[in-house]
Length: 171
Image (cartoon, rainbow, N blue to C red):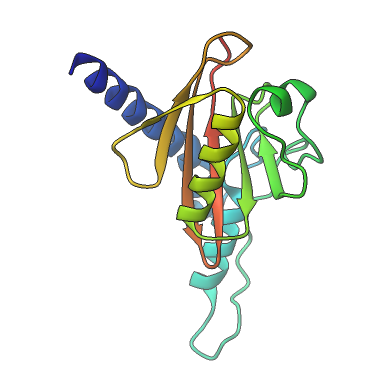
């Protein structure tokens, strides 16, 4: 019972951190200020949502400046240790991460349920033990050894795609 409470607490902390990480770029966009994030900030998701909000009733877009991601946020490939410890990101779009890859995200072609099932399968194949977080659209995973021992994987639907975010503090 205590372990379950601890895992829920960790999951809630992880989700709170994700919200805090995304807040500043959104706040800056709404205030009309330019903000260049040097880490994953959900900018591609925010841009898409913002574009839809800015469309007028006649189907034309309003001229609203959007935040521009900072240098190094769009990445061609994950570092070798990430692919070895978590999963390969080959073929995914909009891969973004902070400098040390403790927070990263990508665009998945499919529903949230499909993205979570894919992530669960990949992690279990890599020796991770998946632990339900108690939060819809997210789960945690743990493993012994290696650079990472815990991670939170969450998915948010955006149209017909899913924005997947992995938070994995380096041990």
